[in-house]
Amino acid sequence: MSDFFSCFDWDSFLMNSFVSFIFLIISILISILAIPHFTLKLLKKKRKKFITTKISYIIQEFCGFIEKSPFKDKELTSEQLSIYTTKKDLKNHKFIGIIDLNLFIEITHLKIRKLILSKFQNLNPDEKFDLVTLEKKRLDNLNTKLETIIGFHSLDIDQEIISDVSQLCVEIRAFEIKYKYNNSIDDLIEQGIAERTGVFGTIEISNIYKLILELFTKLLSLKIIDVEIEKKE
Image (tube, rainbow, N blue to C red):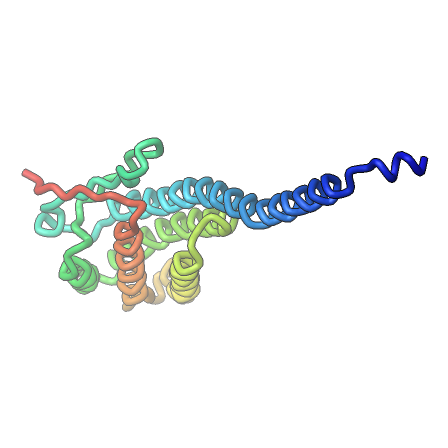
């Protein structure tokens, strides 16, 4: 046994141990630094795809809502926006929707609000109530879909966008409360005792459209979205 230790190459042993220790330290550092880096990079790449998908859902809901809006005229619809996910990500590049409004022109937003108020002003109370009721149903539907998107997929959407969508949903809820005031004299109207002289909710509809158009424009301006503008013949 003593011969073994006396003949043992301690210098080589210590050198190998030292080298092994160095490689161990390097391996630990690589594990600590490199693996999380590439893992986060992969997760970020996958999350980007989900973000694009959820934003596309919101844009599609806005497209559907705006296209069925009764507050448009020939001048406002002279241009068409075709909306896609960015071509920079060809693998996930896809068509999202079309709207007949150029939201990138700021005056368009003002003209729509003016058109809304003007249209209500030119209607008698009963016609005004019917139009407000129609818009309430459309806004209820939009609100439900938006709340579903941000409720189930909030981790995949930017917090600022979630905040903007949430604010829009709050305004729609507030409008619904204001709308109920219109029903306070329904019984009297049905009995022929009273007539409708005014309608609650017209200003709120104009304000909600303002929020929708602003948020819609913000979404279309994101780097993950491409927009093609065409003049309509």
